[in-house]
Length: 395
Ligand SMILES: [Zn+2]
Image (cartoon, rainbow, N blue to C red; front, side, top):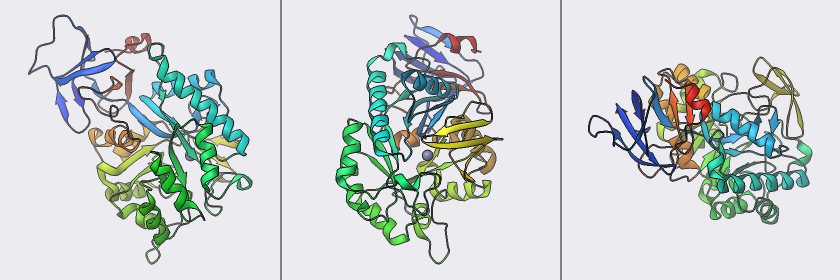
């Protein structure tokens, strides 16, 4: 048994001073305060000093990093992405596709399904990298008008057989699908995907209020990078954004890199969705963690300069990391660290339907981060395993 302690711990709903986190066999067996319970004699004690313990981050929308794109990466490429995520406090992630020719998408889904299955098999050797838990299918069921950089020639109208073909290629590992609800056939596919346990997320859409509401009735329950690649909010024609901001049944995510949204819009969004339904994503692409230059996002060539990823003058993902997004929320919206953390831990875990992640409590996976009081990642711990890298940075 290992007893982890630090200055405080965010579950994240509660703040525990002088925490005591007991871990055995990769699982949290107890989460409380050492003021109310002595440290067990047989436990190995790891003290993180003035650090803050919080759940590991969960990124539900990420295309790559460390020079690797998840549409093309082989297993060593994905390992590089996962090690980069680990350094930024991410312990679970959902590799995200971009619209591409069908055969390329099918082979990417097959490769990602392999990665997900092998990651869940060899737990013990994977303590320095984030774990892929499912796939986010972004495209091809997107609006031509709001496609962003998704290649127009590969966009498709949603049909049950097309979706089923993706589902088969991914061997059932699709956990998120971004879809434009106004497309012909969308409602049927939304209902079918929701039945299979997919979190259907509305995005890359030019929908009006009514077709957005119909999609929610069909089973959609989330929104993808709200404001970006969406029909803009109009006070007489509120459209998709009007529905996303006001329907409390919908959770929604945003990219808080200071580029995708003005800080005032971040504040507006957070006021509308609140600490329960707002989610942070990175939408990070292969250039993340790399110098400026030319990179790929699926089949799209992207020029990265000063943190801005552009293809044909349009934003093509980001080089954001989730720890940075949390700190940006603190800066832009004046939220405290505990509240901001929820948007990268508990909320995305809930949206993804993960019962044992995104929170620190007995029975949950021992995936957590050690943060400085300002929210910088000092250590990431996966399944309670203190890696050599984590030990080096300790204290
Ligand atoms: Zn994306």
